[in-house]
Image 1 (cartoon, chains in turn yellow, cyan):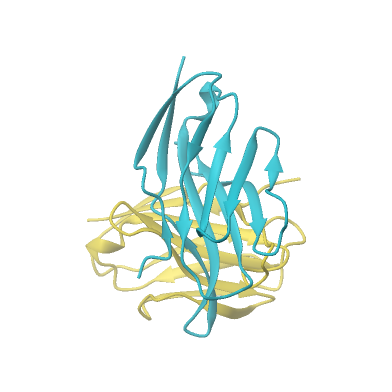
Image 2 (cartoon, rainbow over the protein chains, first blue to last red; image 1 turned 180 degrees about the vertical axis):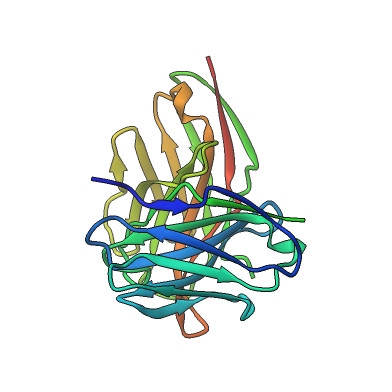
Length: 116
Length: 116
């Protein structure tokens, strides 16, 4: 079956702009979670959406937001971009969600954002 | 405080040899799950193996096994018979309950290079 699809794969923005990233999960998966990966901070959890509701949230400012549609596809938005937002943004889908102990995440290839 | 510690930034191993990647964790939650993921240069995180805190036996998945020492709070990944395709970043991860949310927490990763 098809894996997790993230678009766009690469993008360049300037400070102050906003960006929207998209994630299509594996068919049947209701949970989509988002992560930011940088050389300085490593891989950090942003938030999770499950059946269109935000269920878990990491420690990121309100400029980072997301939503999930009825077909489980998810988008994340970053407003007022800062240089430090340059990162690889990964999304992952799962059947049970991050709250489940044995939950296995299936990741997409990521969207690499560069902020100039 | 760092919850997942991977002390080896880089590891080198000869093809066909075994290698152990270290991971220690810190949690006060009696029920937790530990995961290992592989990230090739393409960026996509790939699930390797899972160990639940109540599992009596060490997890194994093909050439991957997890050396789980609960009292020492360590969950080392053992890769037997290394292959060139094993060259990648390896991340140890744990689900923790923090700030009212379940948050997957990742270590900083270990870069593994397999030499022919």
